[in-house]
Length: 342
Ligand SMILES: NC(=O)c1ccc[n+]([C@@H]2O[C@H](COP(=O)([O-])OP(=O)(O)OC[C@H]3O[C@@H](n4cnc5c(N)ncnc54)[C@H](O)[C@@H]3O)[C@@H](O)[C@H]2O)c1
Image 1 (cartoon, protein in one colour):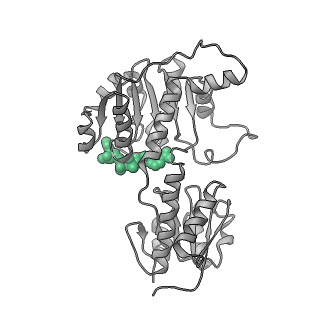
Image 2: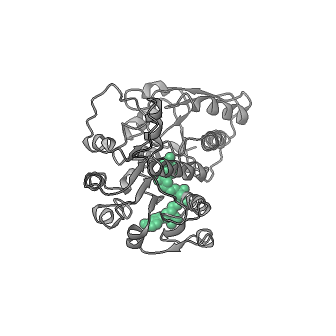
C-alpha cells in the first residue's frame, strides 16, 4: 500500500561532505515530503535507541547491524534499512530476514571514481609527488630522490577487469601502456584495448604496474601473497583500491623491508575496520603492520577514499533516496537484498 504521510528518515555515519548531497537527493526525490535527518553517529548497540520510532533508516559501511542491533531496531518500529554502499557485510541479512526487516543497497555507481584514484596513487608513487610537495613546503627545491619513470611503453597488469578494471585499463591505454589482464571472465572491451589475458604468474613477473580490481572472495583472498610478491619485478609499483584482504600485508612489509618494489599505493588495508574513516591522531597506533607500512617512504596510504567524488557520492545518495521511495511505495527493485515483511 503506497504511503503518503511525511516520514523522517534518520541517516547514520553521514560525513560533513556527504550531508548536503544526501539532503539534496531527498529534496529532489520527495520535494520536501519525506525528510532525512543526518547524524554523524555510528549505529551500533550503544546508539541503536536513537532509531526508535523511525520506520526507515539509512546506514553506511561503518554501522554495525548485527543480530542484536537488528532485533532492537525491529522492536523500536524500524521496517526498512537502506544502505548507502554497494557492500553490505556490516548487515546480518539472515537476522534481518528473520525479523521481517527489509534491506536495500546501492548496486552500482561510477567506476571512474575508483579507477581515476588508482591512477592518482600510481602517479603519485611513481613521481614521488607527496615527497616533492612536503619538501617544497620547507623551501627545499632539490630533485634528489624524486626520480620516477615514464609509464608510456611500460606494462600495466590489471587483476579483475570488470567495471573498475576496464576504466583503469582505458586510462592505461591512454598512457600508451602494454596491457596484461587476469579475470575469470575476459572483458571484450579490454581485449579491444589490446589487453592480453595471461596467467597471474605472468602478470606478476612482467608488469611494471600491478593494479588490483578483484572482489574479495575466498578465492581472491591474499592473491598477492609472499609468493606473488617474490615473483614481482624489484622495481614494480603495486596499487590496491579494491579490498585490503587481497594483499597479505605482513608479506608486503617483509618485501618492502628487503628493499624490493619501487612503491606501493594502498587505499584499502586488510585490518582497516575501526581505523579508516576515524581520527586516530591522538591515539596510540596498536596495529603494528599498518604502523610499519606507514614508515616506508615509498608507500602511500589513503583511507578508502577512491569512491569519494561528488559524482559517485551523488549517484549513491540519489539511489538511496530512490530505495526509500521504493519501500514507501511498496515496491521491491534490483537494489533489494531482503524484501520487508508487509
Ligand atoms: N576503494 C573504494 O572506494 C572502492 C569502491 C568501490 C569498489 N571497490 C572495490 O572494487 C572491486 C571491483 O569493483 P567492480 O565494480 O569493478 O566489480 P565488477 O564485478 O564489475 O568486476 C570484478 C571482476 O572480477 C572478476 N572476478 C571475480 N572473481 C574472480 C576470481 N576469483 N578470479 C579472477 N577474476 C574474478 C569478475 O569476473 C569481474 O570481471 C569491488 O569488488 C570492491 O572491492 C573499492
